[in-house]
Image 1 (cartoon, rainbow, N blue to C red):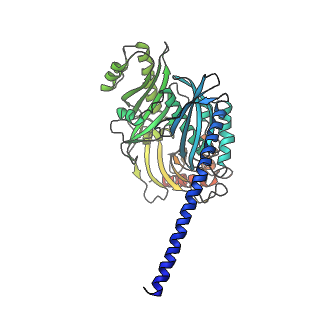
Image 2 (cartoon, one colour; image 1 turned 180 degrees about the horizontal axis):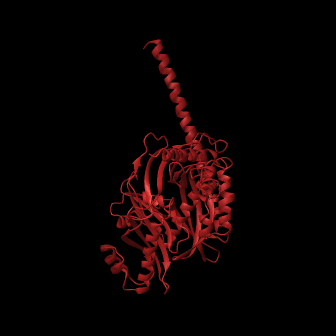
Image 3 (cartoon, rainbow, N blue to C red; image 1 turned 180 degrees about the vertical axis):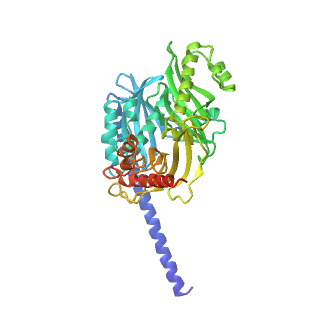
Length: 464
């Protein structure tokens, strides 16, 4: 062995020794800190229990669940052993909010759960949204826990609030089912037999029975849309509580009936009625059910699904999107390519009759990326990606701008454009309101929208 080889071996031995010592130090540090971290987590959990139910004196052992967001729950009791409610722990990410971890309490009857307070264990928002979501969403919710305050996610930290709402919604469903994780995928496959994937549910407001809908696809990449599946909750005239799901597809003028799933039923068995309906879904199969009051409620829910679909709520087909531009729409023509478009790619005709003889205007589809901007200190450069449709009617010499509808938008915290730019434009569609992009609270996104609509307007004026 020459001197050079001896030198390298000596250096290698020293490095190995250093590595071994470092490993021992790290292991020793972990041994020392692990109990401290565990104790801190326990203390944080205990504080959260108290924040949710102030009378909490003890909790049961944690029960693990395999929800999409909820991972476990405990039952909280006071000093006398009276149950206060069930406290669920869950984690969710949405937009630019990552790993928002919370606890939420739920009590009351399974059929009519009562929402309790929320306590944040790990705030997954950053850049000012972490404090905003607490002051503008969590605190108002905790002052009055309800479906209304839970739904108020447009708070200046929408993505963070939505991540919390996703957890609470799932916890509420788990509570109603007695702890069982509902197999949404299996239920959707009953409705759409070729279902391969679906989006997170979106809330429906203002309906009598419909609470939310799922957009369903036949492929994992979510490129082939099948239709919406609506979720309903209601009570019959004699007190039976029903939760059900059904889907709709087809044209907005003549929507098709699809199978249903009864998620929960507190009354008499209606399995035979549901099976008969699912064998050949139709209006006729919604009459003369074995339990008349239940049949009446189910029919009202199915009718509401068809009405929602025909007015664009939950309908993410081209016709469905187009209804947000022209509410009187009954049919559309085939989409054609916009040649040479940089932002606008396709257009199609909109009609107020199913035969396609009475024109409402032309609808343009476009998308683009905004200029880079920094939405808040430390956020880095952000680019908004927006896809929209807009209607244009009239003549090439005197075009009339119609409403716009944003199909997708990840502005700001990933939850969409803030401010009133789109609302103000849709109240009075014109080139004037289109140009009012400053002082909107979303100037870069508004400028992108203006560019897309302007390109569509130029194409229309060109008579193409």
